Amino acid sequence: MDVIVAARLSQKVNGQTGIDTQDEDCAREAREQGHNVIAVVADHKSGAADWMSRRNLRPWLTESGKLILYQGIYAASQDRLSRGKWRDEIAIRMWAEDNHKELFIVDTKLHWPPRDAVEQLRWEMDASRARQEWEKASRRYRRMQSWLRDNDYLVGRAPYGYRVVGAECGDSPCACKKDHKILEPDPETSEVVLEMVAKYLEGNSRRVVAVHLDARGFPSPNGGEWTGKTIAKILRSETLIGKRRDASGKVILRFEPILDLETWSRLQAAIDGNTYRRGRVNGKGMLCGVAHCGRCGRRLHLHNAKTRNKGGSVYNWSGYRCNGDLKHPATCKTMIRAADLEAWVDVRMRTLTDVERVTETIIRGPDPQEDLDRIRDEADALDRLDPASDARIAELRAEADEIRLRGKPKDELRRVFTGISMADHWAALDPQGRRAMLLEDGVKVYAMKDGRGAEIKGWLEAESEAYLPLTRQVSPTELSAAEAVVREAARRHR
Image (tube, rainbow, N blue to C red; front, side, top):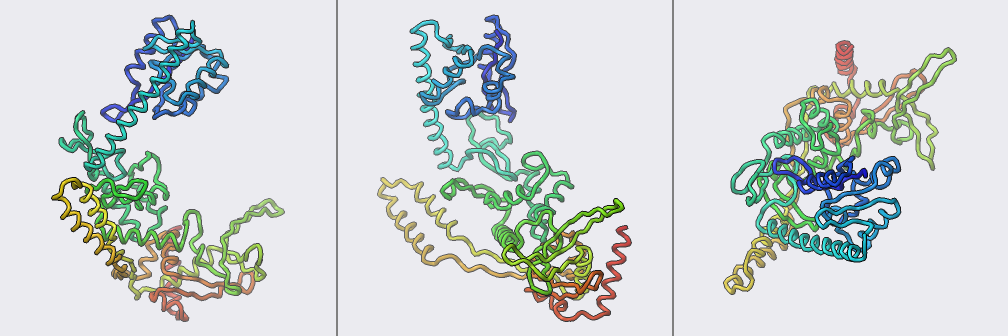
């Protein structure tokens, strides 16, 4: 008959994935018995997962187009089909009877439907044995993981920016069977992390950083293009400072960091500030969240509209419009073309040639949890049954009480003088970088028009003192000089 082989994928020493030798022998056995093996279907089978949850095997069990292609399923051992509870294993046999399929277990020579009552009893006994063996192996594996964590060895995969090396041999990948694994910064991807952090701290959005990394040809963790979500996940991870925590928040592994604590604190402060103020940046206009109606004070929203004239020509309009909200619709009808309002802001920003760009960064105070984790780790390593440990445990308890009483140090606001003028910094940014800059500095632009084609009337408010020259009336001479710069830049762009 035509059969398929239910196999398992295994991880090889060199990092590649392949089918177990036991499953290769199973396919050979099926052919020797005169069957035609039409497919060897392999999955990463984990724990006592239901066989219907296997990504590769499931279509062969549920899709009619595949069900008609075979009459039986071969498995090297009982656990290739099920290591689940009793009802899960029974469901497999019920599925076989409902779909008129035969099941073959190679190592025990079992067959379903059973040929007699003895074979039926053996089938049920082997199913129970497979479940018990999995439970024993699972307990051993959990004990092994606990021992590895207690001895500062790696459990799991390496986070981005790091690589797995042997604790004794120092090789990566480590082919030693008895050597344990630790983490160290990867020579290549750790440099990508450092460049990622540097670009973000310069004030670039996650989207801009992603485009930069793609342009440099750096591969992402999943092998595709970089995304803002991937970058945010990496920048938020405490693995950058050499810490890995479990689900309860306890530090379970320490290793060589990629970033120092000061840079890490600046990075988290920048992320916190940007997340609070600007939300998502992708796909928005330069003044989204910045532009407000000069009549009612409500925020202006970016609209893109396409209309077709009677003659068949298409007219595209993109601009900022005052909508109000569902409960309080706007009545002022402020509408300004996006290009006009963005150029109006651009001209004024280019007048800040004598104002230095100063960034403010919050330096987070050292987290007392770091010292508490260290004390807890040292206390766990002591033998509590040894009377000699009592004195040291008392010292550690007193030190922990002092740290809790002292509390967390206050955060420090640090100003960084860049040596670059506001105008030059603005000119070097793309539209989304300019939006991020305005939102970070708390800038609000109020604008309106008296009629179609009328000149924009507006003013600017900002939290940063650097914008003080713009909050007053800018002189015509300054505006003329800035407009000349904008026109020259537009001419070169064309």
